[in-house]
Length: 619
Image (tube, rainbow, N blue to C red; front, side):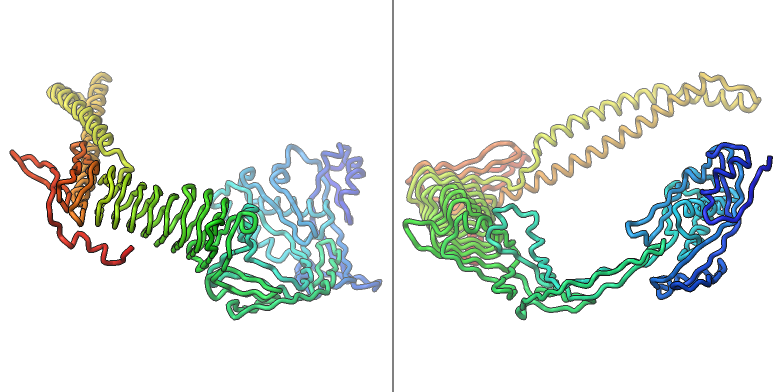
């Protein structure tokens, strides 16, 4: 029986059954190699086929040739069949795939399964050829630089083994380019895709300067394509449509290939009116409620100004459930409970409900405040048991409330005010009782006392361990010197060194390393402790600078100014008496018996420099 069979065929896979009989082997054992192939082509119904050599197949890489609808190609293969023995590792390492329109064939080669040998490149090409023939694709047609890329990859694998899967494009057809119908894309509306229904309700969408707001897709004919098995991919005509719209000068048109982008020339929000688009900055409302506006998210830095005006004793200007975020918010009227207002600049010419939450990035003014506000600078005419957290707070009259700020100014103070300040608190006149002012250290994110105690305990443990290790090292030093001398003598006479000697030296070296590491750890913790202590002291030094000023010098009963120290951990406070006339209360450092103490300082005078921050603005 012959060991191989060589034939010319258009489809080797159809001949496998007959070849198996000739070779007297099982069908699944039949394999083949492509020895050569010839290619013929023609256009239309011309009966004459033209032969083209393998080196001239680049002729079909010209799109104008390959795209002709009447192009026909056929190939014949000279193949040698033989009996396959063992597992075909190269075939198992290769996978071919194509895209949907079969305009691109990709080979994935798993180089982790392949060791380099001199015939690896030939084995790879043979395997790829066989897989292409099985899938009824042509060999060499529109391969472009595939073979060169494959050679380069195998060369790289030869010098530095590739431990991953590599993908290479085998052949490329011509992709269909779809026609383009005219339409308008509203990019700015994509910003609200993740918004809740309540946040989308108002329709107000803020934008930045130089942001693409709209894209006008212009009508454009597409171009046909062709698959690698010669199927012509027809392109549909664009749908006839006309998009009518216009844009103000605040939207700059930028022409691109097939479309025009409209780019915002300033910050603001997109205003649309009868298909006319503009970038506006101001919105006016009579009043707002949850059903009509929901939650407005216009951003704190988008130059959007919202004015709400409803002066009524019966109805709120901002009703329950409403949320607003914008750069400037002006409310002429009252703010209901369960509201959340956020702005860089906030003005409320009315009353805030006890359950209203407000935030001002820069500055806020409120006529009558009963709710909660956070901000940088907060000015209030009348505080009625509201809460304020800010850097600077200025109040004309306070009927009670909670304030946390770096600096606090109150013109008229009545009853039940609880104020925490970090730098300075000023009261023009006391007209009520039970007012508490508490000076604290501003940064209390860390528990310094706990941290320093923990570091102290850890340093103490390391110090004790250092002493024990040092004693052990000193106690064994003479013994180690003796052993080292004996080892030198043994080495001189080329005698074997006892294992016990080596073990003793090794243990001593480990002990020494442990001692050095423990010393290093102790030093690092000492440095960390000193750093925390310096930070801790600087914070307390800032507290010592904190001052309270009663400008009139007249006090009410049951008022208190308290300073909370970190070290020693104690409170120093002043409890008022109606017959006293102190204007200044602060802290000062005193030395006694070479020890530093912090004590309360009271004075009937104060330095005007302490109030310099008030001259910047008045409530």
